[in-house]
Image (tube, rainbow, N blue to C red; front, side, top):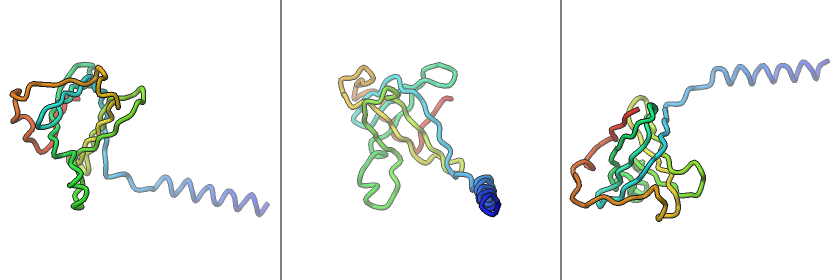
Length: 136
């Protein structure tokens, strides 16, 4: 009987602790990527919105810089390459309601149909941004 009481007390403690756990300061949203276009200034990402429409956003190369991580500043972008069937997609993170960073999950094979190249003359000013413009 004492064992049963001890087990119930531990379970009650765990359930209570999980119920009152702190909420994360981060909010994340994932988008399926249709195509990633390479440009000398960054990436143009065409993705599918929640309304099943295509939209595009621009992500500067300097967001993905390894030097930002070395200087103790969190980079605004991360790249993950793999062969998972869910790739390509991107996850955008906000911290306390403000843009934090974006993570691109891309196919390892650079010859995959999800990659493309855009003209170097195509709107280079579009990459001079502080946060991505997204349609939901």
